[in-house]
Length: 276
Image 1 (cartoon, rainbow, N blue to C red):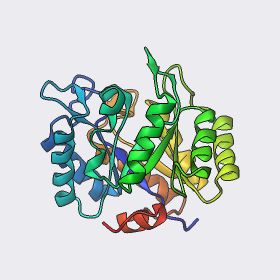
Image 2 (image 1 turned 90 degrees about the vertical axis):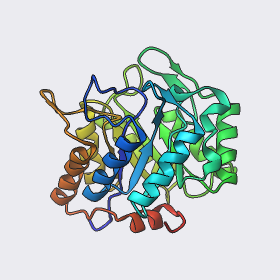
Image 3 (image 1 turned 180 degrees about the vertical axis):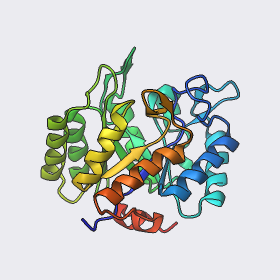
C-alpha cells in the first residue's frame, strides 16, 4: 500500500493529569516541547487543548493563540487542529478560538454518553460551530462517537454546511459510548465510503484500545491518531514516556504494513488544506 498515513498526535486533552503520567504536557511550554518531539517522530497533525494556570481545561482564546504561534515557529508546516470539545467550555465558548483560523478543528455533530455525563452537542451549536469553521476556512475533523454521527456529517456535507470532502474520525473505547469492536469499525469504514466516497478517515482508540485502532487504521488504508490525551500507557505496566513514543508506535506499524508516513505537506494535500 503506497498511500501515506497521516499521524495525528493528541498531546494533552482535558482529562489526563501529571498524576496519571508525569509526561502529560500541561503548560504552553511543555506542550510545545512535547509536540516538537512528536513532529520529529512523524506526526503531521497536532490536536490541541489548553489548560489554565491550575491545570484545568479551558477554551481561553488567548492561550490557544499563544500555543498556535509557538507551534508554528517550532514545527513548521505541521497542521494545527484545535479542539472544540465540551469538557473545556459550554455553548459558543467552545468555538471562541476559531477566529484564530487554525488549519483544522474538531467537530462532533451529535450527542452521546461519556463516562459520567452526556456529551451534549445540540443541533444549533453544531450548526454554529460548522458555520464558524466554514467562514474561517477551517477544515473540520468530524469526531464520530456513534454511527448516527457519520450519517449526520454526510448530510451536512450534502447540504453545504460542511465543505467537500469531509474528514471523519471514528472514536472508539470511551466508556458508555462505542466500544472497540472490529465489526463496527469495518461497518463505519464501509458506511463512510458509501455516503461520502472521496472522504478520508481515521480513528482514535481510547486507553488500551489505542494500539488496536492504530493497527486497524494503518492496515486498512486510513489514518491514525495517537497521543497522551487518549492513552497514557505503552502497556498495562508501563507509562508512555512521551507523545513521541506513542507516535513512534504508529510509525513502526506503517513500516510493518509498508505504508509511508505522510509528511505535513502530503497531509495538507490529502486533506485539501492551504500550504503551511
